[in-house]
Image (cartoon, rainbow, N blue to C red; front, side):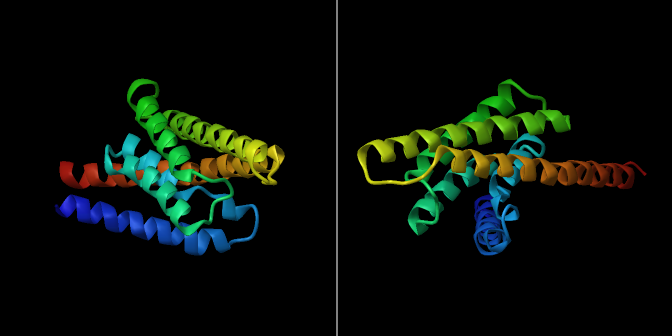
Length: 170
C-alpha cells in the first residue's frame, strides 16, 4: 500500500511539474516529455514497475484536461507504455545509456505514430486542422530534449550508485 501511495504521489508531482512548469516554458523547451523520460528511466534502470503506469495515466490526464493536440491521448500513451515494457524487457539492456535511449526513442516513436494516426483520422472524418509537419516537429523536439535530460540523468544516477556502493562497502 505504501509503494502504491508513494508511486501515486510521485506521478502527481511529475504531472504537476510537466503541466504546470514545463508547459509554461518557451518553445521548444515546453516539449520536454518529462513523464516519459522519468518513466523509462525508472522502469528500465531502477526496475520500478510503477513507471509504466505513469505513462498511461498521463495520457488519461491529458484527455481529461483537454490539453493535448490530438484526441485519444490515453490510447497513444498506453501504446507507448506497452512499447516501453517490451523494449525494456526484450530488446535493450538496462545497464547502458544507449539501452535507455533506445527504449525512450521507440516509446516516443510509438506515441508519435499513434498521434499521427488519430490526427489523420480526425482530418478525414471531422473538421480538424493539424499538420503532420507540426506533429513531427513537436516530437523531434521532444526526442532531442528528452535525450539531453537523459544525458544528465543517467550519469547522475551512476554517480550516486557508486557513492552508495562505496558507503555500503566500507
